[in-house]
Length: 140
Image (cartoon, rainbow, N blue to C red):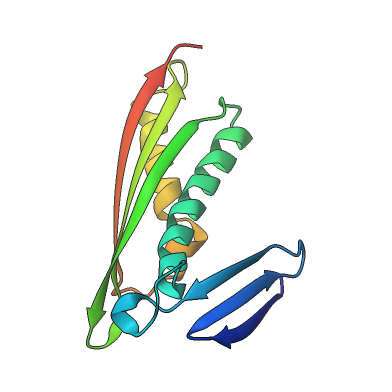
């Protein structure tokens, strides 16, 4: 996949996904000389980790014949200053599974799938990844 990135001004960039034409913008964060009016590049890294985890969980469940999960979550990053980099990303997920799909074996498999998503495996080894998953069940 290819992307176009253009520097606009005032520490803002526009990014275009060539396959779809979708566009988003990034700003430098307020703590690094920017306006912080939209996602920073490091914010995108944090939400990419959470999104990747959710995506591979859904793929795993679908491939194994399970019901589509109800999933929501959040991501939070912490920066270090010397060197300036992402120190940690905390991902909190709430996964609601059909009660017939909810076993300890399934929960363990979901945790493993999330922790081994492509973004998780691509981050610097010194970037701490903290994953918390809360499981709830619902009746079909």
